[in-house]
Length: 228
Image (cartoon, rainbow, N blue to C red; front, top):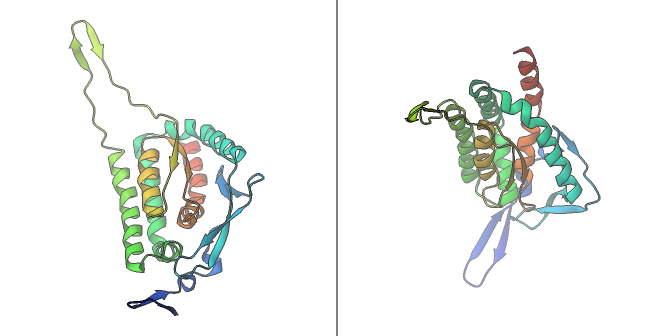
């Protein structure tokens, strides 16, 4: 379906972005905290607009300071177990995330186009880049180089120990919502950190969908960690 818009010099034809995704393919509208979607505090709701025709695709919950505090506390609670994993274990999880994105590449690309107004081919490229980013960081996590332990000053042994920073806060913009989120998520997780991410309120859908798609991997990781 298309919509024709008259202009003084030409006709602009806009695709109907709402036709790209079904209601069932939309992500949950709440905050993703402690591995589940929650309704949040006293905040209102925000319309997520389809730029192709100005219609409302869905609504999402507006975050409050209390919601941020809960998200940070959840990330703090998760950091010790995640940081304790060796690079090989973290890399395996990142590869599983990449696999999950690849399995759902079609719906992610269509959702990205519906939310941003991008041509589908561009969104498909963004999803492909997101998958590749997780695979790249999975390898990078196992190839960190540093100065070797040695006597660099007479009578003193120098050792460099790399440790995760902890919880990282991230804010992502509207124009490359999934890809720019992944550019932050993948290296932060690869380095053993946890995070709180705030996507643009204009284009939050693929970030929320990402959380929905990989949520079950937390349980798989926890079981693997318990048996290690």
